[in-house]
Length: 186
Image (cartoon, rainbow, N blue to C red; front, side, top):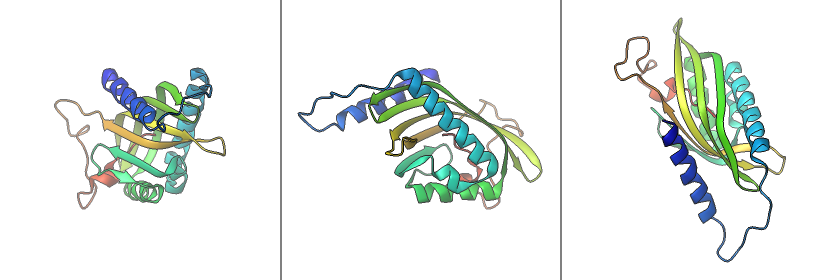
């Protein structure tokens, strides 16, 4: 799975490099990778707090206005407002009682662009039953004019055992909405 995350991060870096205007050379200094890692872990910690509070608007502030997210069990979602609605649906169907987001790798591909990958684990209470969801994720971040790193592209893969048991099988909320079941990491 680590190889998959590294492949995704490499692909995001190539896409970012390809977006540089033709003939323009990079002259800016890249931020130190340990500084970027610490900043993105701090953003993950803030994301955890918003999840635990069940605050979709606060989660939304971790994304750029035009962010795109693709999470296991949910259609690709584009735009901060749509992501807030996605998380709002999730929070109305279940309560996050534990959140652990870990940035395992991070680095800058441009002075205001970084990529990261990691793991996330959440306990979610649904209808009086607690379920644990474990994720692998990768993201591209953009540094805002306010100095905050925000997610511009986010992909998450739910870890499901080869033979799911009733306690670990993917859960559907009333109405069969897998989007509301989803618990995406940052």
